[in-house]
Length: 311
Image 1 (cartoon, rainbow, N blue to C red):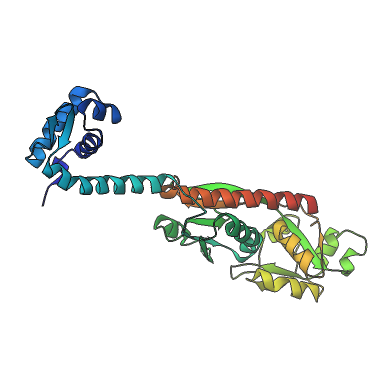
Image 2: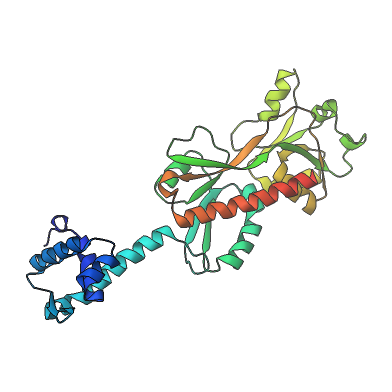
């Protein structure tokens, strides 16, 4: 087996130029080197292949039989390398058959998927999507191993090789059924807010949310009547009861448009938070991954504008 590490593969580029131009001077100009350098490359090629390769006949350097024999393979090898490098640098959504996989929550998927699928149908008709549940214990490993392309959610203490870009600024909004007794005065007061039972979305096995921590600082307590790990089990339950609940503002628009629910401002000073997109530094400059991130960012900018108009 030939040891490629001992061979200057730039010699193949010189061979290609000589074969195309049939002139040492023109071949040197083609690959932007001096004529002495091209002459030296020809000498090394002759030693490598144990053949003259190109012989001057009149004013032209004609290829030998050996040069004619190896030329197709040299050209094919160089074209393969060029195609590989081009694929790494460019991404054409119109022709790509890429499969993108990302991890996110059901609520955030419900926000972006309708627009993302529409965008893909128009701009990337052959690209497929695969969604999985975001698992905060393992998503970093999934990014590192290339099992997912991006993750969407709220993240803390990411390692330095995982990059993050905020997508949306979120805040809690209250929802309840239309004509809920807490809305008799138009707004829900703090006393009414703690008077009625609540439903709490949580993935943990407790009944304490961010709102409970703020209430506790004021010596107040609310009754958590139901805890639930499913966003889309909430709306009909709230619409058919006197339960109150707090949901992200992005989700509020969807719930109030499709269910008999009304939004209200929670009478507490609550912190906002960011929904972000995370990806591995290993794929930071990958053209396909960059395109996907840009599309998601574009959609989230549109969603944020819609929310600002509604709230």
